[in-house]
Image (cartoon, one colour):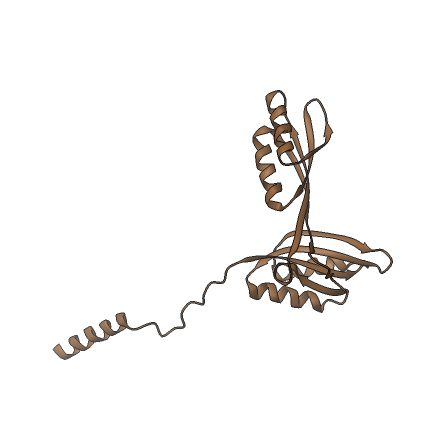
Amino acid sequence: MIKTANLQRMTQDNRKKSKSVYAPNPIQQEIESHTLAILVNNEPGVLARVIGLFSGRGYNIESLTVAETDHVAHLSRITIVCSGTPAVIDQIKAQLERLVPVLEVSDLTIETPHVERELALVKVACLGEKRIEALRSADIFRARAVDSTLESFVFEITGTSEKVNAFIELMRPLGLVDVSRTGIAAISRGKEAIGV
């Protein structure tokens, strides 16, 4: 009986010292935000197919812009800002490239230096001192008043998402009523172009 007790104690001590027999938890990969430029044929249903790829697999889209860029060649450019681990981003790019109307997928975040801009229309309803402060703040942010009434302004602001967010937060205590944002438009720097 003494031997059994000693053996159990030794086994418990060894378990405490030894590592688990199960594989350790995988290293948590950090979530990254990537800007993807996608060149597609401008035909009906292309945007729905691209969006369907994201929604069908549970991927999140933070920003989406799309417009025809070449009327003669019938080409459109879709700019998507999405987030995920590096493996998820690679999977998104691979699945986008498999879609028939997609001509090229470029990850601007890692492939090349790029420029990102966003446009927002910000409506502020205010009177008196708050009205003067809203105009001063807009001037500092280089926002332009595109509409004005006796009780409100509509400001147009262009810049990075961080700049737009900062302006919106500054307008909140001054009487922010409504915001309309375009989403991010991005293009690579230098002479290289997507689809060339």
